[in-house]
Image (cartoon, rainbow, N blue to C red):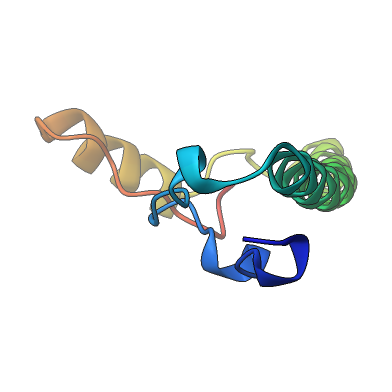
Length: 101
């Protein structure tokens, strides 16, 4: 197999096995490693961007909460108390709430 016949990286998703490594040449292995490292770098960069956005959004949420408490509002709503009661009464892990995170 020459480098031009190495399967596209899209075909090497996490749920798919690697190609028959014994049948690949040294250059094909190096090309495959280089492509996977490139993909990992892209994923890592995207993850860092997402974490930065999450941090900014959480900081905004904290600032709003601090302003509402400063204005005399309760930091805990009735909905929060009801949800906490349901979580504590349940024996299973609570579902991940996209809005609360």
